[in-house]
Length: 149
Image (cartoon, rainbow, N blue to C red):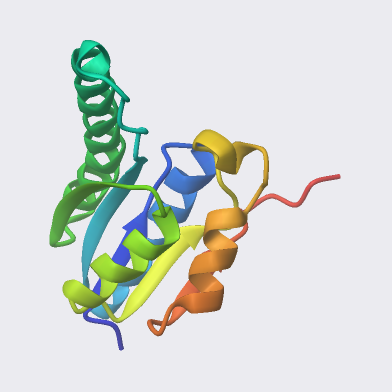
């Protein structure tokens, strides 16, 4: 069935629920998972005076991404599913998700059907919709286990 499943996360509760479902799928099919969080690239400062602030913001964003992906990796470890963890920084999150899926030879992208990072919070589902529209790798969009009233 599947050999390697990419699980992008934004750290939200729905992303973690989607990750749990993806891990169950991986466990049942003998696949490994790749936990991924892409941090939004910060605009580079205009002058050297702001360089330190920019570098610190960038480092904080990558650290937060590693923590989010680490939670997914921990769930996989607890379930006994082989896993790896990837963090990245990009101005185009959907392009980076697709690039990583292709580079790592993933045969499925399994993600929550909403977005909670940066501008994505304002346009619910923007990143997942773009991944679905442009990915040559099959995509499962997880909507959640509860239906709103």
